[in-house]
Amino acid sequence: MSTTRNGYDKRAEEYHDLVRETWGENLFDLAMLEVFAGLVRAVDPPLVADIGCGPGHVTAHLRGLGLDAVGIDLSPELLAIARREYPGVAFEEGTMTGLDLADASLGGVLARWSIIHTPPERLPEVFSEFNRVLAPGGVLMLGFFAHTDDSRLGWQFDHTVAPAWRLSTNRLAGVLRECGFQEKARLIESASPHSKRGFEAGHLILHKRGDEES
Image (cartoon, rainbow, N blue to C red; front, top):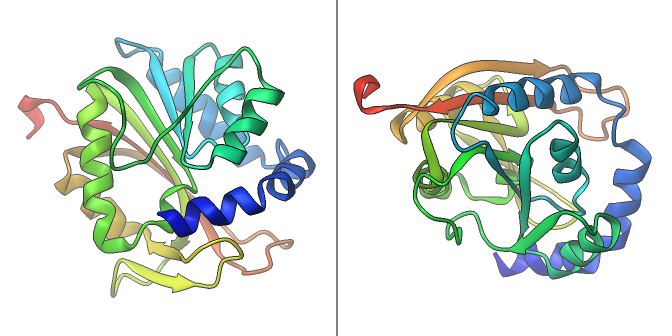
């Protein structure tokens, strides 16, 4: 965790510059956020945590879609940028495995490419924490680097900031089922021609199962 925090702290402004250059170009990404927002609006309470919010652009976008959204990140430097750029939005420091949120207090959890730095064996701990803070029927959306090989859950790759993993979509969905989630939809994007790694992008939308679905 400290490696990831320090890595993003050191490259916070660089990462923010990259986001400013590319945010809004991916229509699939924007469409999935629209679907997520629509599903969350049907949940009580319609409060969302954008976990791994970085410089805050997506948290602000969710608020533009009508959601009460708070951004959470472990990097103080990224949070400083988020507060500077979006002064009307709430941003808090925190980690995915120890959220300072009450049980069943959220209608939605968004984690876009923030789980990639979590070793695969620790993902159940992360997803159990997401389940804890979501209200029954609450919506979870994940973004990640996807793999079609189901022989194992994750493959580590070189990342400029911290160790990261590419994940089997089917195996990931299985872990989420074990942690109390029901899959609603998935989208797998082909690698962008501008992608330096050539990885597919995965999007999963799930909801927290109620007792009757267990």
